[in-house]
Image (cartoon, rainbow, N blue to C red):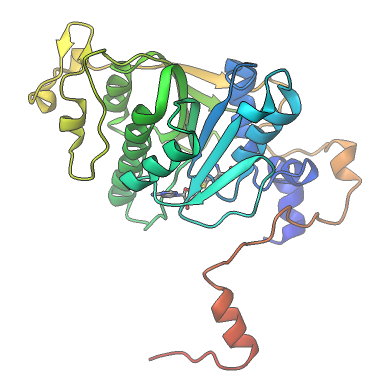
Length: 310
Ligand SMILES: C[S@@+](CC[C@H](N)C(=O)[O-])C[C@H]1O[C@@H](n2cnc3c(N)ncnc32)[C@H](O)[C@@H]1O
């Protein structure tokens, strides 16, 4: 599919470029915020964007904190964005090229915050897919768990955590684990997220871990060990976690986000809004690739030095 036809077919892709966002995912965070208003809090100061490249969520955070919520002293506000990939600079955002699963990354974020806790953490993480469905789902679950573990070490009491999930078979286990730590958990589906995809977002409001529980980020700690000592309703998590009864599992409230006037990302629009229909040519990307893995191959190809090994 050419660049031009994608501009017409995927309206969020087009709108992202019109509004200067590096990716269409910006609208997912914006529509989640339209529903929950977590970014409209004028007291929001320290914010972390995990798995942030190319940076459209960080752009939303930057615009919200520094262009819209202008009541709070800008000096006190800080946005840290972390990704394995390098990111081009975004105003008011400190970028870290780092692995969110590594404990050193936590130390670096805390250092940037002067050891103060964060008010809001989000994660739109997705690993590179292999095509092996079970393996991909497992790696995605591990990434969410890593984001959650890092978040528990960095989020202030009452803070908010938002993360991308895939509603696979074992998702209710994750809802239960989140239930130990937050006052309210909602599974939200923004209109800009394709209905045909299992993608959704957990919105975890009011971080409220048990007072006796101390989160630890250690690569050698299993998930069961991490939650050891957490209590949830009458249930005390022990080494019997894996022997849970079905009725002790949680089901999160489900909410569709984005007004009905918002574009439906799965629909084909015959009567395009004039702002789009009148524009025949495609728009250039907002941000070119930073250092793509294929850059060297292109250079070798141009100089005629690319050889195929047999
Ligand atoms: C869907 S993209 C995020 C898009 C981003 N929210 C935006 O709006 O531009 C997923 C990102 O997760 C990152 N990622 C995957 N595993 C990671 C890890 N262990 N540590 C840091 N980033 C990771 C990938 O490099 C990729 O850039």
